[in-house]
Length: 117
Length: 116
Image (cartoon, rainbow over all chains, first blue to last red; front, top):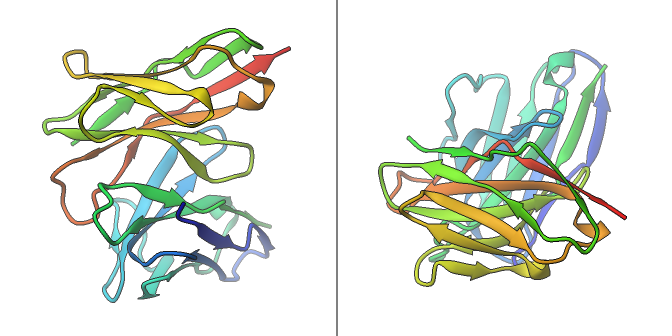
């Protein structure tokens, strides 16, 4: 099956610093990747849709200058949380959609737990 | 716009007993339906999906779900659970003919706690 690798799995940073999270599709090409945020004991909330070679599409209420998304290749998308603050602490999960006829099946990374001190 | 409702936030169940997790959705167009499982501090793993064809879908780990269009439901079942089935389960939908990206809409999740 399709494998999505997300790195790091856990990161602790000081308030005001920036953190980059990587999402890689290991054995397939992903024209579209998605970034989600999950608060404790809650569901996943879509933050943005990332298409290779173009600007990401952000969901309403998500600050694009705060959460920078880059999808420079068919196997890599990155999410950078800029000037992180404690309220940005959360579980961030990426997913990738296979570029061939996949009928909307998304494969998920293992997630990144961000703790901002 | 689509929405997904998982009626039970928590379901305690004894080992080897059956379990059913309820999922209802609303959408103005035809949808694809999914169940995902999330173990603690991990991402989501696809359990099963309904795309078309038979309304009874079998997935991994002995799970199955039935698509009921008239009731707009996609309930998940397992006849006999194991301790290892303790996890969070998410129902999700996406539209068949969607805008670029075909986004998934998730339900609130159901936490299954299997007791010995």
